[in-house]
Amino acid sequence: MNSWNWEEHATLIIGGTSTVISLLRLLAVTHFDPETAFAVLQSVGTTTVIIGTLLASIWVVVAFIGIAIMRYFMHHELSSQYRTALDCAVFAGCVVILMTAPAGAMLLIIIIAAMWMHVRRSYLGMEVRPKPARVFIEFVLGTAIALTILLAAYPWMPLERIRIGGQTKVHTGYVLRADGETIVVLTDKRRRVEYLARKGGAVDRELCNHHSGLEAALIDQPILSYLFTTSAEYPRC
Image 1 (spheres, rainbow, N blue to C red):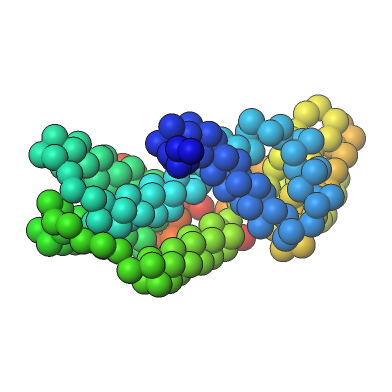
Image 2 (cartoon, one colour):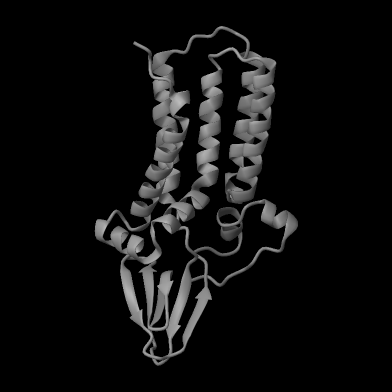
């Protein structure tokens, strides 16, 4: 009986992993309330949720997939062609992280580059048997760190302040849907879905930010945005 080969099911694994990541992010941004999660899905659609969560999480996914692949190949001999391909893949992964990760997460690139140089110099081409206990501990720690980053992140939608003409209350949250009659908002603090009736009044929407100054520079903006463009500054909510 042939053993299960993960390479033959790579497409299924990628699809399943993407679905799990999207589900976890959706539950996290709704404070793990199923009714709120269903309301978000109803308002924005499944496709938007999947694309939004993956775009917001791609740097985490790329970083940990890259580290996992390098860890795997520490115990498998590679030809020169495979090494060249992996060099290109590591470079591409670092570019993706530079383009999408917040500036405060740039330490990941240093870790990945240092680990890859260590793998190439010390392990590739050698017969090294993995220690099951160590591999298991690394898997558990890596999964815990990845989940912590994913679940602690903000929603993939921009935070806004919404004012409806004739009303004094200012609503702070994430706009899920807006039409001529209703604005559907996921509130920022309580993470509950609210339906705001426009009633013919003018609507004032303004993007705002959880952070200001240095915090916003480290947490919200990728480092490449400071090299090629002028970073947008939004008022603090």
